[in-house]
Image 1 (cartoon, one colour):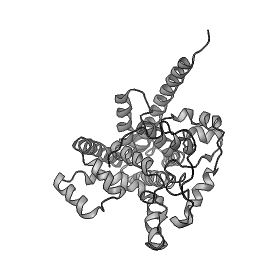
Image 2 (image 1 turned 90 degrees about the horizontal axis):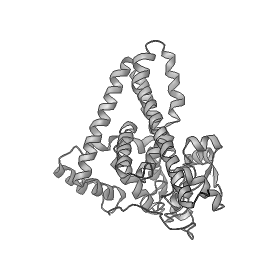
Image 3 (image 1 turned 90 degrees about the vertical axis):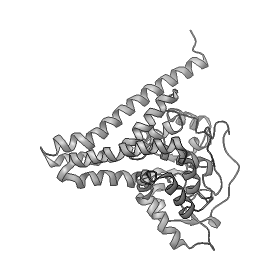
Image 4 (image 1 turned 30 degrees about the horizontal axis):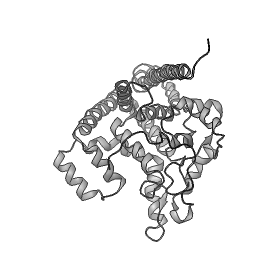
Length: 331
């Protein structure tokens, strides 16, 4: 009996759900290992067990890739399941789901605009040296630091939070748009609850590590560096004001699968509704090309910020516009 297109799609969806749940269980187990099992039972037997944290560090970005699926409602077709996984995984990741979700969706809306791009500065209005301070802070760990500490701001009383926004956050900036969206009553409640869970989880980790607490600091530091350093690798020095543009970067097949095909980032920005498991297929169907090697592109970021005048403007958009931005965003 022939398989219809609808049956094939249902089968792919079922496979994706199983794979996503399996990955979620594995990442949860790894987090439990590094925060509780390792310090409580293995380190007291032999401190050399600490070396197992080194390969674990390279799972931070694949973990973010899975959370990214929940941000785009692609982890599971049931919204409540998707939201539960997103929140639970983001707590173990170290930042509330609403912080990650809204900031990422705004990234899609404003991608490569001077307002949002972290590697751009306007020659004549700012110096490269000044731009470099913010750029290297963001790239070398600052992005994750801000995501991790951001819940603290929302524990302020509503009136103080409003005055903080009016006094310290410039209107019309990415920060102003985000804080406006995060200041909705429902969102603030969720951020506060998730923030409490995050700091409780970190406190539990500190208790478990005890005298080995510098190792926990190294765990969080490695996560902060890798998440921040590889966040903008697909956008660095790409055309200005082309919100659908991102690079597809080559990796060996095994590394590509571990990263959940996140290196097919150009495909993702053209259509964020495509689940990770389908990105290579669409890449081949559209006969797209890689824009470079992933690791070389990552190291290229160390060249620092670039003036908007030195980059090409937006060109004609590639690919179908259908489903490009599948979520609403206020502001």
